[in-house]
Image (cartoon, rainbow, N blue to C red; front, side, top):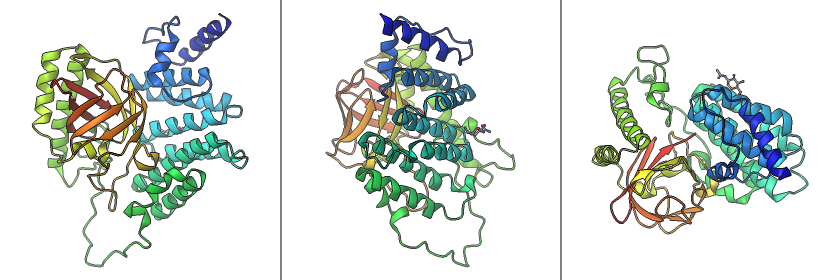
Length: 376
Ligand SMILES: *[C@@H]1O[C@H](CO)[C@@H](O)[C@H](O)[C@H]1NC(C)=O
């Protein structure tokens, strides 16, 4: 009873950080909410901060989520290092989603400071959490090198990845990716004087990119690409809003629109599967937004773009990849077929029929659609 009261009080104080636009969380069923995050936090109050931040992110209130993470860091990072390392990672991912690469780097540095003193005394859990942090930092340094204006992004990334590998051997496969393993970068040849296209950041919804015609318009040299992305963004919006309305006919129609445009030969083995998703539709009905984080080789939760980045097919048939959230693991069975180990709320096996940056569609053995949407 006492614990329950405490939970209620903490919940109320964490919820106070979210603007009152949303109804306050029902304090009588906190465990259902924690199940939905399934993050391996040690202390219940860390989970409450995450619930709070996730709601804010769902509402597009990034600043509220940022403040929630910052507040946790200020209050609790000294006493709960492992939770603090995991929390800082979420914060850094949020800044990346908010196109704030310098902010993400600053947050990673905060995280490094949190774990620094205690890494030597060999707590395996903390080492693993720290390794994930350094690994994500390394990938972020590489992925956002243009925004960060860094000249030696590959070296910085490689150093961070090496450090992650010394903390946790399971991060080693990432260092073997061609972009990090090549011993020397080719010097730029004189003939290639053309203005380089900076590829627009992947995973960023088109409506959050700089406006057409603005100075930093990433599509200045390729308006056609912007049109295509806008078109697909509309298809995504149609699908996700149909899920939200629980409109089965509209979901089916929107799935078909995307499925006929599937451009991947091996969607079930694609690197685009890696990362954080939420389940939006399953078994013919709207699904609670349960998260599913798919980790690639080495436990990575993101695969950067760019020259030398790994190509599809990325995942191996028959290999089990670690997941968090509504399933414990994901195993590609063929180029298209996927198995979700220990899945709750989603079918244990389905064919991947469409996949891109924002949406992942599958069909179970009765042809019913399964829809996931990308999360930060
Ligand atoms: C970028 O992230 C940092 C760290 O969270 C934050 O202090 C800053 O306000 C963010 N900047 C913008 C423009 O959102």
